[in-house]
Image (tube, rainbow, N blue to C red; front, side, top):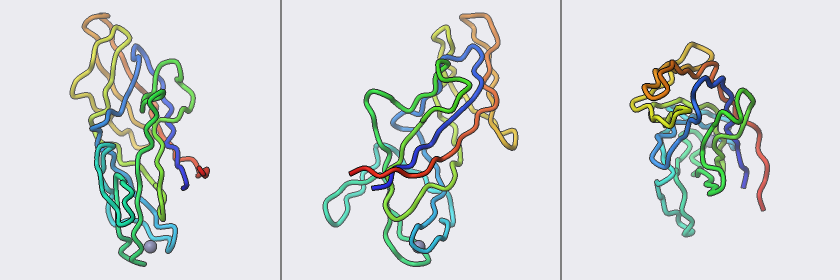
Length: 167
Ligand SMILES: [Zn+2]
């Protein structure tokens, strides 16, 4: 089944990590690989969502294409060793943030929802943190009370790289 990798890059200043937890609202646009049509809306799903299919397989998201009526599905690939995290060790280079396994459709774009967990180098968690869109990239500015310093995430952007097959 094809695997799609959502990669992220950003400049982190005083920020140790940005993580999408298990309850993060993933909101993606998909393109049907059968007819080439894009979904009408961005679709929200979670790593914890379970949709049982006719053949017994369990996926995170199942969607019927409105145009060709094929039933497609997608799931988040979970790696215990590398959670959905972007850290200061990776910045400012591209690094995989999340992988999606999809059948019959491919992720086309990410509508970034609030709820990413941002942690400062001092260990402070920034609650209610939102990466704001600047048009082409996203940014976050905060104040680390423990480190007594301003922190920021700038030039946060993503790309979805092409599929590789898993047997
Ligand atoms: Zn279709």
